[in-house]
Image (cartoon, rainbow, N blue to C red; front, side, top):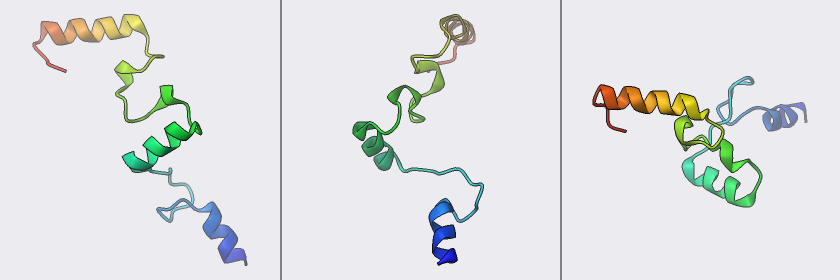
Length: 71
């Protein structure tokens, strides 16, 4: 019984403190279901998220343009 309880609390990787990793398909299902906030979607690069600071985004884009870095 105790082993089953521990297995339920342990992430799929088998380490008690390991973060949970989801496949892109699983994440798509979770976001469509509404269990997680779509603005925090880890599949979207941080610079394109709604809560990313606009002045920092402008600085990054200016630096990329100056050094010829494409997105």
